[in-house]
Each structure stands twice: as C-alpha cells, then as structure tokens.
Image (cartoon, rainbow, N blue to C red):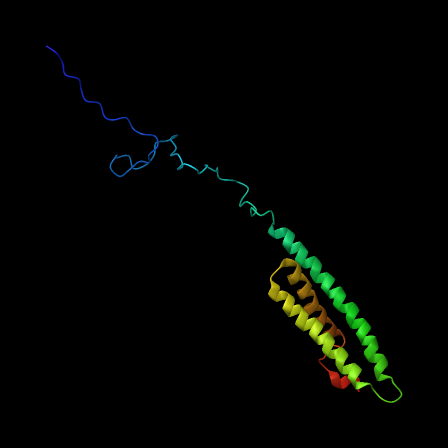
Length: 159
C-alpha cells in the first residue's frame, strides 16, 4: 500500500509585503520588505534633516543677508553724509538757500533709502534682501538720528 504525499503550502515569497489574506498582519521580526526596483533604502539619520541637495544651506544665506545688511547701512550712511554736507553748504549761501539742490538731494536720499531698499527686497535673492534691508535700516536710522534732516521727512527744517 502506498501513502499519498501530503500537499505542501506554496513557498512564501520575500518580495511581496504581507497581504490581508496571509493572516500575519505584519512582517516577522528581522524580516524586511524590499523597496521597488530603482529605489535605494536609506536608513534614518539621527543627525536630523539633511541639507538641500543644491549645496546651499540656510545658515550661509542668513550670514550673507546679515553681512550685506550692515554693508547697505554703511553705504547709505556714506551717501547720506556726503549729500547732507552738500545740503548744509547750499543753505549757507549768502543769497539764501538753494532750493533746487536741497529738494533734489532729499528726494534722492528718500528714493535711494526707501525705493532701492524696497525694490531690492522684491528680488527675493539673499544678496538683494540683505542690501535692501541695509538701505531701509539706514534711511530709518538717519531719519531718527537727524530728526528728518536730509531724508525727506522734514524739509521745513532746511529754511
């Protein structure tokens, strides 16, 4: 008499994830599910998020913005000092103040501080953001320190 062979269950494939019909519900300990072809498995990092792939990090652009903000402040201060002296000398004329020079210098300083500062902010580049912020801060600082002389706030102080 011969004994019929007992049917064996089909071998479990290691390339498929456990399904709803296999009864396991989760992968066994130590067993990993392979990634689809073309994707490499990346282990989680304990260091936190990786820097952007283009090589630029946020810290470098923040430092650039701060540095150029100080450079913009210094540049506006130099221009303000030069044109402030021109305005002061034009008010000391023996024939009376030279209004065209006073008006043109104050309009230029207001446009340089506010217009160029705001325009550079709209470019949304780190160098433009820093420089524009420096122009805006320079205009505001010199407006406060000089009570509006030479920045276009108080033109009645010139006469």
